[in-house]
Image (cartoon, rainbow, N blue to C red; front, side, top):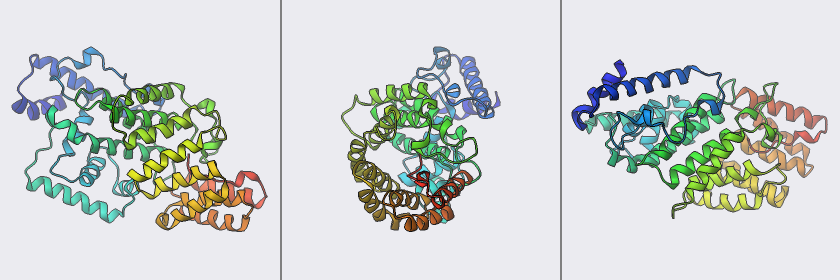
Length: 386
């Protein structure tokens, strides 16, 4: 209730009091309590924690027309103020709202931690100089901030799906919250649309694989080794539904492209039956929009699956100079080298990938692949992360 009263103090003087103040306070307090309980319920399944696509009428009562129904989503929009550049908005959102550390943010943005720390200082200074209050923006201000919010949610999910450090490969609570917020974004009257549906589709389809990311021994699983029968059918159906809705617009975004890749993996019965040639075509478009090294590496791996190990190795080698601190380029190169029966070179790349591995499950995977390579086993092949 204290939280609800503070929200009222920051909102009502600017927007006016609602028609039913007591209902407004009750709903905000209830939502806050549910948020706190959701964060504490770490043992729940992913699908069990996600809110319905269409919020119940009872939750909408007491809110202003077109106002954000989720306090955390409202805070994301608040910090993504247009006085900041897009990169500062995303960095501040990830730190102040999503709760990521400087090191985690740096990993997601492929930047140095010192650079991220400087961005945060600069963002706070610019907000102070401009005398910008951190408060939920009016409904008409939401669309111009939506892309920054989508990017922040994607990076928040990515950290949860593949942690940048530590003993755990996945942090389900981050993925759950990112999916929940992306879906809230996709149904809000001022932020819904093809791009928001595409993001929700991407996150839901990818989250469907969470339970199979690590095996019972705590070793990271590759995509080809994951038992697809254990993928969450409910999340796949939810993602495909959002993907269908995303096709209503005329503009093709990077979220559409990434969501289509996720859908091709989700519907394929096995790695060998995946439409890799179509995935290569999609990554050609993604790289044209998002020239990040990881996008280029994903394209290189798809080329290897579509055109053979030699073509894949050439494409991966072209990416390695820009992935000096990442284990994934070396792991992918090792996989194609094993296919080409060049075990000595493969071992060198696997050892490098082991040295660069970011989490304990990834290190265990590289160790297992090195052992398999020494034993002459086919299971030494380590493609890109799943």
